[in-house]
Length: 393
Image 1 (cartoon, helix red, strand yellow):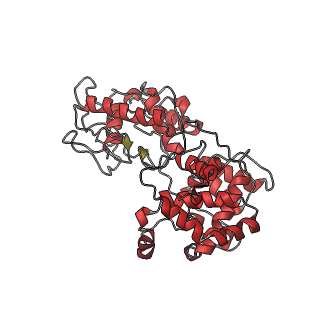
Image 2 (cartoon, one colour):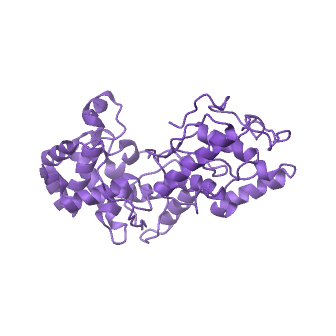
Image 3 (cartoon, helix red, strand yellow):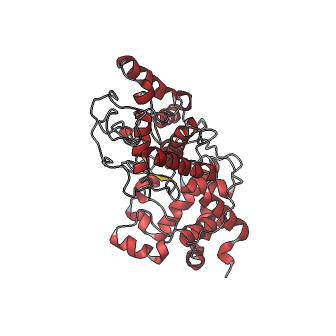
């Protein structure tokens, strides 16, 4: 995936920043040489991806936006986007084809870019050598533009066409990769997070909610949305419909696994739906899709027993992310009834923060809290809800 086949050499796995310039690099020479740049390898000393983007990847909206900004700057997309739709996926493939041509071959065209993968490394080299353009400053947050200006002012001798500004396939200048938010736990609603792991924009949104309890602000960033859900703080999550997502079943779907899960826990579903005022069919739809489409081919119980499962069935909850919500411990999520109860609480809180909520919108934010447009899993949840798939043989 995103590999090379005997092409560009010396791709750094984790280069350390080296203060250097592109002096001496001939941008008319063939290939994308691994020298120059700010790291000595023709790059910029850091990965600009927090997770993979492209086919089958996490596709965090922020990553997609900055990757698409690079593609748009080079005429490979009409405009930046935060949605990993078919146009974006084709844009990555077209970007890889261009990079492959510039490098003289060797780059696998698979529509995937990963942190420090060959696609990102070659895109950085292409920008540092002046053969491709960095994202336009007006496609970036203002704080990033200011960083660009400050750096250019402190290094006037640098060729900004080659080394100035955000670069590469996902170029959020100076912004470190953001891990999933993990709370310190604790009882009740007192959930504190490590500010060092939260993007400045999310910090601002969290601070705004803390300073104005009871007011309902639009919240955009994943970490701030998680904070609002864990603390049950008023907020509005904007998410758009997506006509390109039809809810078709993936090839890996195991229909019987979804049916069995809903049947096994239906008494708990009914009880929690009544207790928390949530549509029981919405809970069934989410449980069905999570178990039918995300059951690790029936090995989830083995993975859980080995401690290798990052999410826990029957509702496929990430315990590290949601630990501390309503006093829940990681151990609690291993109890199926507590797992379902916590999931229903999340579903209700997501529903209450969406204008005109639909199963597809709720399911998309359930799948990824920072989602701003209905995604594949959300559409599948919407379709399962509409067709009551858990009742079909």
